[in-house]
Every structure is written in C-alpha cells, then in structure tokens.
Image (cartoon, rainbow, N blue to C red):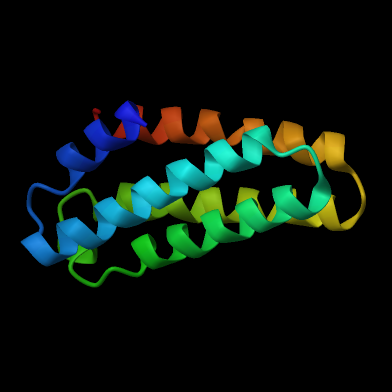
Length: 121
C-alpha cells in the first residue's frame, strides 16, 4: 500500500487536483482488492476481487487528464499489462483452476514492482 501511494504521488504531480484524487482513489481501491484476492480461499471471492481490481485499473487508465502527463505512456502500459493479467487470472478461476489463479494473482506484485521501477518510484 505504501509503494502504491509513493508511486501515485510521484506520477501524478503534473495532474490537476481532481484527476489526482480520482487516480489516487482507484489505486487505493486496487490495493484493497489485491489484498482481498490474496486472502481469498474460494473461487467466488477471488473472482469478485479480481473483477473489482480490473474495474479500478480500467477507470485509472481512462482518466483523461492523466493521459496528458509526462509519464502517462508508461503508466498506461503498466495498467494495460495488469488488466491483461487480471483477465488471465479470472479465466483461470472460471476454468476451476484456483491454485493457478492464486499464483497468477500473486504475480501481479511483479508487475507493480516493474512499473514502479520504470516510473522511478
């Protein structure tokens, strides 16, 4: 959660206040959903948390003001990769492969770390 906050602060400095608040809220919500997905013990809960996380990632990526920022290309690339990974994890849940879906969910941390590094946060 702290890493998400630091990343957000660094990346959103050039944004208008309303856009910053919106992206920050989506990032916090994604962090909460990630925590919920990580602690999920059943397919329904895992799928629900992954879908919620995807909704928040999609909203953050669509923020029109953020797409004008200097780091928007890297930010959107990272969110695009995250959304693809979320779709893959949801597909694993739908296929009844809970263990593989949990592993895929855990791998989302690597994407977060990769793009925090690319953004210098």
